[in-house]
Image (cartoon, rainbow, N blue to C red):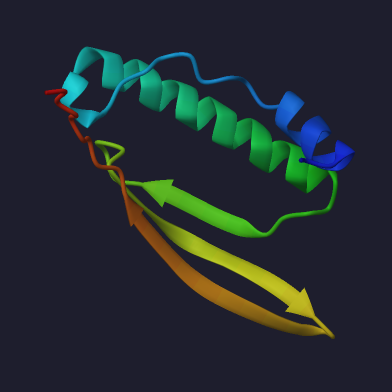
Length: 94
């Protein structure tokens, strides 16, 4: 189960309502907009709480995301590159 701090953080982020993937053209644009709005709000909340720990951006289509994340431990900053692709899978029931 999630702790209270996690529940609070999630409740402050706009919900994603559009169920679509990159192949859905028009709906994907709406979903991507929702993703960006949620991400922007999450970053704003983190900065306000002095909890800034990543930078993330995507290609124009919103299918490839990349950036950096970091962690500071005992006054040493550990920085990591991150990259992921958004894929669209179709399931067929037999």
